[in-house]
Figure (cartoon, rainbow, N blue to C red):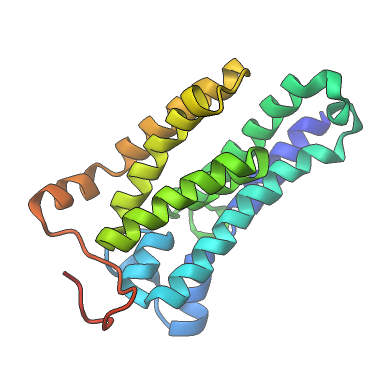
Length: 213
């Protein structure tokens, strides 16, 4: 019963519509009416610039971290003998937060794709793996300025790291890593299409904000 309450709490945490609140509160517009229409960090970068995009990405990541940390409210799962159950619960809490981000109750169930929140989940469970994925993400972003491409490649790097570099023993976590990569690729089908056509928008990292290509 307590686990169910924690899952509900994780959903509400994930439902915080960072991009919507920032766009409305600071810029006087609804981010979902501009760019790709997505209420996430990528579209915020594209429409509102790197400062707003970075803030939204950081808060959305924090949602995943906080959701996972809810697991420590139950003493049972802090016992080293229950490590497998702990990881399973943490993944469950993190995934529910991602669902909350995608379908936020606070924003009429119109949210983002959940990539940053998903990353926060990984950061909370395996920080070193998460940092490696960040390195991949930043390298691709620096080279291409495509947030979508950076997210896709970093997500593919995730199961590679889990399966072959860190050799994670927990089978559920291995399955989860593969599922994450597949989910990110599937949710970025439109972005992949635009990338192949050469019309995907770039984020203004070091150049003028008007520079989109």
